[in-house]
Amino acid sequence: MREEKVLVLDFGGQYNQLIARRVRECNVYCEVHPYNMPIEKIKEYNPMGIIFTGGPNSVYGDDSPIIDKAIFELGYPILGICYGCQFMAYSLGGTVDHAPTSEYGKTLVNINKSSLLFKDCDSTTTIAWMSHTDYVKEVPQGFTVTAYTDVCPVAAFENAEKKLYSVQFHPEVMHSVEGMKILSSFVYDVCGCKGEWKMSSFAKTTIEEIRNKVGKGKVLCALSGGVDSSVAAVLLSKAVGEQLTCVFVDHGLLRKNEGDEVEAVFGPKGPYKLNFIRVNAQERFYAKLKGVTEPEKKRKIIGEEFIRVFEEEAKKIGAVDYLVQGTIYPDVIESGLGKSATIKSHHNVGGLPSVVNFKEIIEPLRLLFKDEVRKVGLELGIPQHLVYRQPFPGPGLGIRIIGEVTAEKVQIVQDADYIYREEIAKAGIDKQLGQYFAALTNMQSVGVMGDGRTYDYAIALRAVTTSDFMTADWAEIPYDVLGRISTRIVNEVKHVNRVMYDVTSKPPATIEFE
Ligand code: XMP
Image (cartoon, rainbow, N blue to C red; front, side):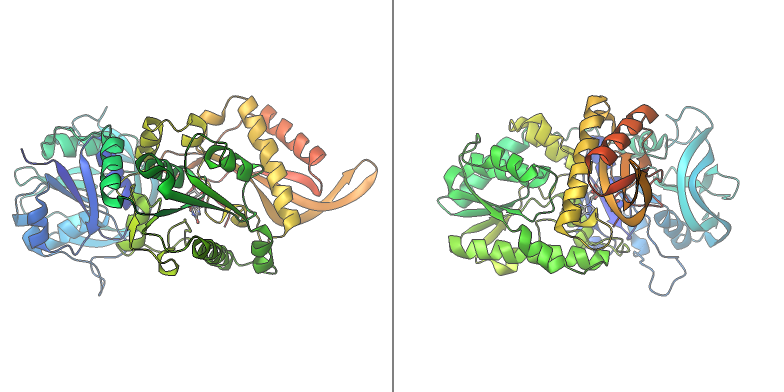
């Protein structure tokens, strides 16, 4: 039987990995490859269907990404999204133009429900996420228009016979209310997939593969305590036990008590039989960050220092055969493909190899998305509170302290964040939130406490709901809960006299402040 795979060709948009994720949510395996994947390779790959992503370019730009027109003759069903939609129109003889008004955000789209793509939508209108400055003005010969908006005469078009479909909006983001239905219709009804791809056997097969590969070799893993590196470490420990050494670098930018929590699970008193080394490197990081205020510079310093510390530990251990990394699929896509604009340079425990003497890297999670990693974690018996831990950025509190990082500021933000998390859990709303944390602004302002004047810091509270972290809405935390948090923070945390709540979604803001 032909293996069911959908191929996403990446034109450099910000949401591209979401497309692959959504396809996998339909239980169909999916990979993202660069737009210039050779036609021969595409034929070899033999997908059930192809999706063209969005991208920042205009089809008329000099260096715009293009694919040979031959792709439309291969007989594969194709769905073009945003730039992919304009590219399909332009390549096949339609007209693309600069839109009189850019459409950005949630938009009412009129749809033709007799299209296979829209057949499961509730009515003849739907809310979808638009983000474009060019638009398709005229469709190519043989194609019909299947959706429009007030601004956009062609919000979707198709040639059902040739199985070529395009949408100007982004069905992959959560803001497109019926986006998942539209993508499922493409995957199941247009491409003819059955949805047979499952995760359940992943852990078992991976453990066996690792065991065969590693044999009696020595394995080294950088453990951050986050979900990805924890799941990778447990997979390895189940496969090779004490042949694995985990190095946990406490950079002094972790949440309150976090270092001890990681040690409790992975250290000698925890359930896993692995060699665990904790390095307390706080002072080194604070010294390097002294006087630095620029966010990207801070990220870079933290990332580099992390490597230095890890390198020193690795040297003490001596030569190892394998290095484990908790790289997941979004990291693979972000670092290697497309032409997306860099919004923030993410730091993970990746990027270590060149400094450590080893034979090979093992990345057991490199083809999995976060929710898939969590499923594996649960299968491996990792405690729920670890598996569903909120994401925490590699540079840690370093990017939640706006401006210069000092030991004193770290303590302020740790204490405020601890209170915030405690009250959110008490209120029973922690499960409804995608991510929530306190940040320390670099603003000091006047306050009054007792009978005296204060001139102290403002804490900013952030809470978002999101399923993909690429887009997010600010969360509506009840006022009484916010009130309690604010009172506790100003009363209990020294040097804070003001608490603010961030009511900005992503986009236009990002989740973290830096
Ligand atoms: P932003 O701030 O870009 O964050 O909206 C999106 C998600 O990514 C997390 N984040 C990071 N994760 N290394 C990481 O591993 C990083 O450098 C980093 N920066 C942001 C952030 O917490 C949110 O979940």
